[in-house]
Image: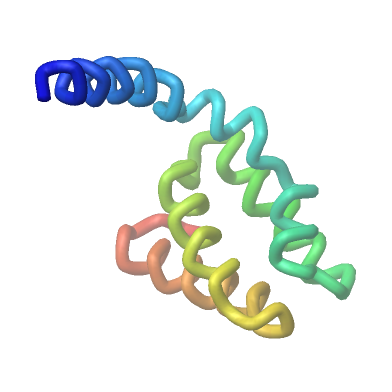
Length: 101
């Protein structure tokens, strides 16, 4: 019993720091290209919107957390609707938070 408890504590102790990501790590890996691929952006205007969103994140207008959480929800949708869901949801969240997109 003690051995199992010790193993669990040891596992959690090593797993937590490894799984934690800082905002800088997410920013570095979460690019416009990732948005385009995962949201299946097909048209030029859709790809330009992905570039615009990342540009707004880079200049500090749009927090990474908002983009990332809306993206996570969008990728759970059907392929053909992901981009539309992402754009609409992002616009709604930004409006609610008072962020001008």
